[in-house]
Length: 458
Image 1 (cartoon, rainbow, N blue to C red):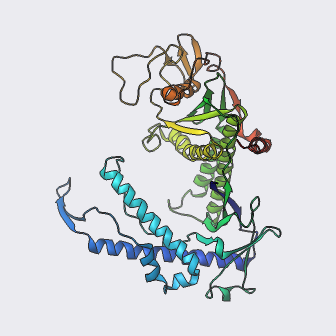
Image 2: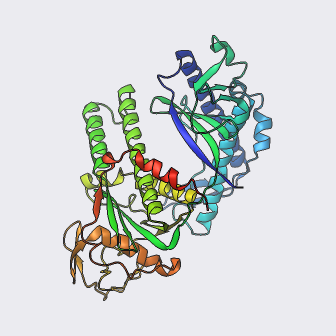
Image 3: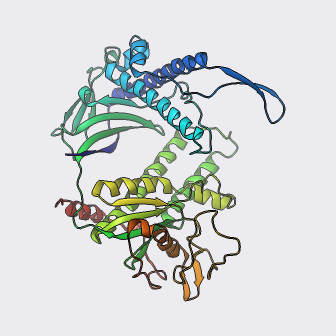
């Protein structure tokens, strides 16, 4: 029997006692200090063992730098070295161990990225993990052994160290519990400070379920955008658009409020009011991402679609040059987070998720059977039979169609042979006027539909 892990977030600020909130903030400070202390020890040991090299840079200046090599790190050695550290003792043994594990994970990720850089799988050279902000806050992780969870009372009691108990009158740290899982399913509780707010993240495991009656000869192609956040087209000749204007308006209101409030102030100025509006925007963005991802998965389950093909261009945001206003609209759209969420939900129900590059998908005329090339492989003399006349309109030899819907179906065309799907049922009708769905009009019924479908497991 296989399991998968899920996370449930609950806002703690304003829902717990003041002394409990102060205690959690103090623990977050200790966690931040322990992380920096452990990382300092790892970095210094690495630099002491590295050989230096001298060279002249592009400006003919004499430089000295360390040679690139893997950073050696041992979790067991860190636990041995820091078991008497004051920050480790303040957190408690298990919480301190989780913090040290995060240091090991950061260094391990750097080593893997360095290997990929040497093998030319990535272009940018990775940097060794850097310190967190001094006197800042960092998450505190409580494993299941350090948690007393009462699902009937809806409370969660966290284990605290001897150094922490004097700060609490009742010498207990009790939080509101989660819902939808049992004590046996609980794996970890994380206290995460974000934007001046404290969150509790309940990590629990659930049994994997596969949706029945999925047809893997069907596929849904997705072309991401801005106003048309997700334009989707299936190989059965159906298409629709998930509107992104709500996301644009959220970002515009946030940017306007920040610009007006910080007028005449330093670029790095920050206070509680900016924390408050940033927290509000983050919640709205997270809600929109979850709704859009769930809507896509429910559509696939209701129509028994077994494949999702997501068109994605590497570096489209970091290398975008659309002008000041368009760049602001485009870069702040959380499409990468939405793609990741769709992939997580798809894999949790047995839908195959495929990512493909989207070069020339909005230029090649699918109806005229134009060739579709990968990025940089199109011959200079080759011309497509149609052209894009406005932002959302493509002029095909068979008439006007939606440029975004064309991009979605061309994403399917790029992997059609690989997935073994047929595009014979795709006609001009589904590429002309896709149905538009507004995220603000979605109700909670879309969640119940997926739960009903997954009750019968194949």
